[in-house]
Image (cartoon, rainbow, N blue to C red):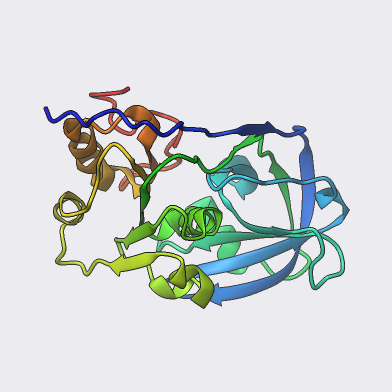
Length: 257
């Protein structure tokens, strides 16, 4: 196994804790996005005091399903303390799958005035410092978090982004696209092969999120390179054929850290 020399740069990743409470929010707008995605903008008095400071933050949405509620985790796309509705606003971006999953069903039909309960985030892990460059990888489900990573780094360190699985670069605005070197993979391109061609060493921070099966070989490749645990953050946000995947579970159960 290749082992990288230890970096002399200190690695710092601060954590900020937040008050845990359940909030009842109201839909104030919806916007169709590229690549079968929709942005739902929430408002309401319950957003007062809400905070989401880290690119990997997750909130828990309580969605109607089978006469009850199910919880699904989502990355806040953007939080504004003052929005077009005059109060605080929160954007959540949904991928609309051709299934009857509760999130897809709700986001496909939610209109202005619809309400939803939300919990979290428990805390925020801020973007790390002390890396020479960064590599970000995402499919459509991971795009909101990738966008937040691009904003958090803002080109320092230099950042590359690989979009796979139908992720559309048009999701990023001009300033975000300018802050990262973006490569969009066509269906015939193998994700692992492309990652193997990247400039990755002990001073590279790698983040990835998307379909779990596609990311397992990427994680194994990075471990085989000797990339330290603090320099990689890979998450299965969903898994083909499995509903409600726990993204906190090990990405590769056969080889957990």
